[in-house]
Image 1 (cartoon, rainbow, N blue to C red):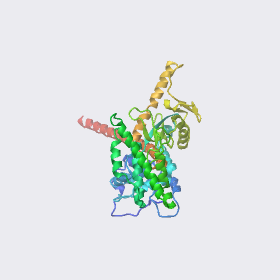
Image 2: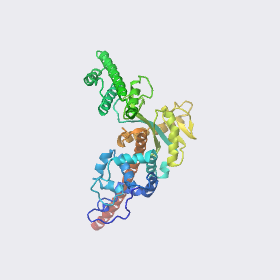
Image 3: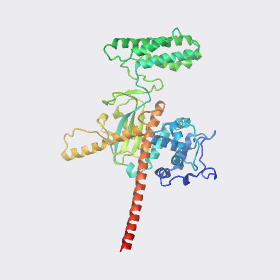
Image 4: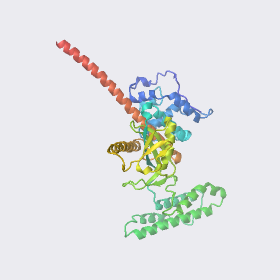
Length: 445
């Protein structure tokens, strides 16, 4: 059931009204006043059933989701910080200063599952609607793809095989199965032996230790399968054992390999970076307006698709979010393909053969501007939780990408409000200063 924030709360002498505590000209207060919260409540109410216990109010959850991503905080960290910050409480719709946590951090998980990718896209659209239509509806849009890394360690076969051994031992302890051998001390020594295999003097011993680890892992999986004779117990561990067998059957040059047990959807992606040859996560794409630098599209892909194939679905999302398609899409040389998609001209940096000096200069200026998407994506990664994705599953990849784009837009609008407030204060100061100066000169005369 949908939760509600009381519009006319009962006066409470033991609580302090937030309007008496905070500065009503603060940028977060002005940003909250720009958002149409009634429309947000109406759009997100479709995700709640009519019966049941009232949930956390929609404004509180949507506001918390935005603030959490804007200030690069985790679920637990944000809830702890929320009590300390009266501006965050006002942004989330509170009337009185709150002294207790507003909800359990796990409510973030439930809310993300409730709204899914569609709801996260609505939040991105909400952030775009804060800007003027002239800033959003530009003729040229910049596109680029990145890798959103998942929260896993750098995978190696030996690590995975060791986890299979530990998993089999846990199953045996839970189901009271007596294994033929647990290999506890042997595995510990083998993990030491398999290190530094690139050193010429250790290579032979390390490779032998890695092979032995794989052999032990397969032996334990088969032993557990044999002794889980009850079909109910075997079906309970069916998915886990199937994942173990898939990893044991992988070869070095296989495609669609599994790199993590808790995130089997992770892909190995190479973007040609000199400092980081491979990244483990998913591919994401961003669309940003050329002049104003507003994120008008953010999309995550389940598969490691070619960069050029990401343009069409990204253009469709841009059309859904802003209601129109741009005239031109500026991309890098990694997106070679058709010159027109959905009626949009696709421009790629070229050699400039057959063009006049004026045309070459204009092309260079255009693609120098296209390169501005790189630092924007760098800020989105570092400041808005895109550097490492902690959300689970493919849907978590998509929600995190969309929320990162929305957070960037919100911070952009926050800076814009702050600059406008500073300009107004400067104008007032100048008027007062000159008025005082004129009066001073009059009295001196």
